[in-house]
Amino acid sequence: MNRKINYVMRLVDIYRPYLFFDAVFDDLNTEKLRMAARTSLVEEDMLYFDPKCIDWEDYFMNIHIPGGIVKHVFK
Image (cartoon, rainbow, N blue to C red; front, top):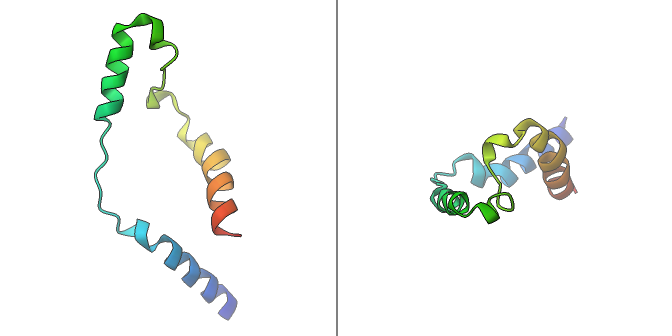
């Protein structure tokens, strides 16, 4: 039981900065780049990175969690 409590407390310490993280992110620069690429048809296919086409469930389950969290947090 004590081992589980220590484990949970370690996770709390690791994730504390992210729990109450009060920041605002915007995609203004990304949108400007997408608009510029749209006007220049040559680069549009090279710079195609519309986040609406990302399969977020697949990303988190198969890339972010195993490659980041499991690898770096649980070592």
